Image 1 (cartoon, rainbow, N blue to C red):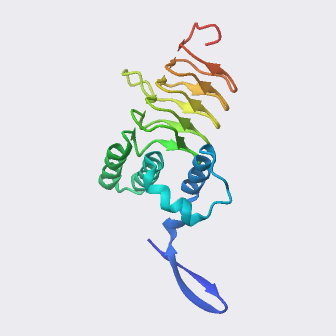
Image 2 (cartoon, rainbow, N blue to C red):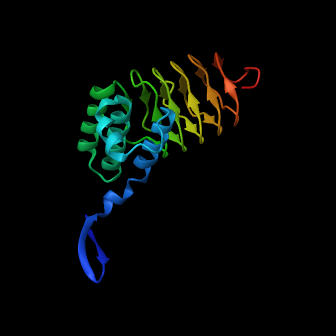
Length: 195
């Protein structure tokens, strides 16, 4: 890690590690999650920061972001340990290799599983009991667009593409591509009315 220095009024001030600048995704996650809770932007940072340890959904997301960073920088044992901290903290198993865009939010943490090949865009929202992964036959995992919501108990399995703005209903099983802006429920597979 290289230290960066800030120059203020001709003085050199030792700076933070370069890696700490890569917190944009975490900050966007915080903004998205607090907005979904109805928190006013006028709340002070101190009031919000004091409550952070009380929200398991936020702890899980922060553990995921830290474990993902470690995984991508070759610190795999540490990444897996942080993943286990997220599991103990909120009951969500999110693999550090998953590529989840900024604005990732969890509404209820218990029972969420996200596989190692999952790729998601901005503002993904997951409810309790969601599984994003493979079908058990090793064929690949979901690719998810921006602004997608996945309802409670839904399973999105296999190498499927979920379009931007799609809503996956509660307890849905998705085995085929979902077009952008669609709302799906039940078993969605090839041969479904629009699947």
